Length: 223
Image (tube, rainbow, N blue to C red; front, side, top):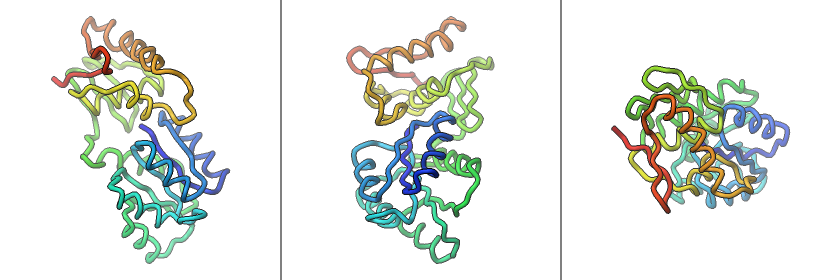
């Protein structure tokens, strides 16, 4: 899952980015409203964490612009204002949730996961394809009831593939959702990580899971 943090407090944005990367998310950071709009219009994000008091277009204006562009990824607004009227303006601008500063990082992660689960289209709380189960909240993966230990990057890659079960997912799409904009490698890194997943989820169980579609990408076939 790839996230955008739009926050002009460098210390706070760095702290959130570090914590979310530790949770397995790819994270980009914008410091102004213009930067946030640029990033959100160039890259496909799974969710946006948006501060209200951004320089340039403020968070409310950015949120409205994204919705007018037809970009419906979940948006969490951050603000130091705790007035009801301010929260109403944020939600009316198209935000999905609202957090008052200072907030607990654990609450941010929990709200983010909840929004990602019920995003449009609705996301199931637990993903299941054939005998593979992936729980985004607990970061648990099993096959045939056996726990499979994955790194954060492997987990993120598998999650994208399972959310698109039955569809061919291109290497570019996988890079966009699992790696951030600072990634400077080639598409071969996807092949390497798919190899890691195969060694953990296929070889021990003697059954295939991820199929290569030559010249296109990868697919996990829904049962």
